Image (cartoon, rainbow, N blue to C red; front, side, top):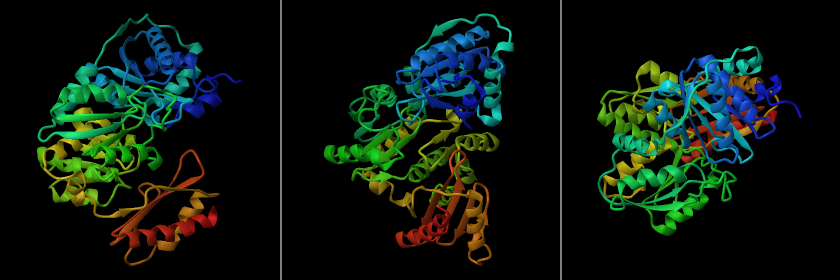
Length: 458
């Protein structure tokens, strides 16, 4: 088997935003140790806070990374088991660079490394990640630094207190079902909701046992199949709301009292109105495949909507440029200026609970005004030539008087009654279609017209 540190493997596992690979074939303790030293070499971080998820390989790799970082002269603070947003909190709260060992929603055989500079400033391919990759490859030529110190620090209670200071929940008592998917919300949810008390929230836990083999379902709530258990449980328990988190608990999806999955764009719009009530006239970020309802509602509430490409690095960069108070993505990531511009599934969940506790109506009624269009969801199609299909689509729609086109990310075609976006995958020969219409008939027509063009090349 080839070394995990050879150039081909490094090129495969260093992605746009993080490191991700199969254990131990692509990622192991030895590589984690090398990444630790390279991280300090590239960033110059004097202190690094390290957390890890519940995957069996995570504690060993986190420890190996810490050894490598210390060998390069950085002092390392271990926070142990953590959600990714808990690691971001630690990075901001302690003012240290941060590293999280997790493969998020990926299956059990994977692991990965998410990295940030102090105050949760992200590190991606354009902001240091590729330099870290190259430094791993050149490790043998780098002299050793002073030996850094290793220590431990528990930030879970401080994390919970900070989130509740940003989104306090007051009002009527709520019955809340939480599906942790055997991921890190099984650790964070009891602490966060425990601070609210049983007189405010009756917590109904699902799959809170930390288990990186994911025995019940994949911890990937964007896949409707992984929400079925939660949907059934919400109805059976006559709960007010259901919450689903991914493996590292940085994403959140919600289910209403009828067991219906709520589109993330709807939650984006709801949170936006709450943040705009707190800071009128603020800027709110949304990616270009969020519902058209999001910018409409932001404007109606006096805010300034700003549209970005898909991907958290674009959201975070635009937040930094504009001073935006909040940003949301269709994928269930929600970003908060007052949380170091980082994403937090738990903070998004608290906003949903806070909004629901303040009113005496069901969640479906509360959200009715935030859902104005019908979306297709993301539809992936394998094609032979991504660019040729995009050019064919542009030729099909260009020149129509009622149509506008843009190329912010792939091809977006907009009309008065709906829109679609088609963009290519960076890692597979896929085209991703998202369509939305003013009603089901319109959305279906748009979707099927576009798929007919795409599938001619499939």
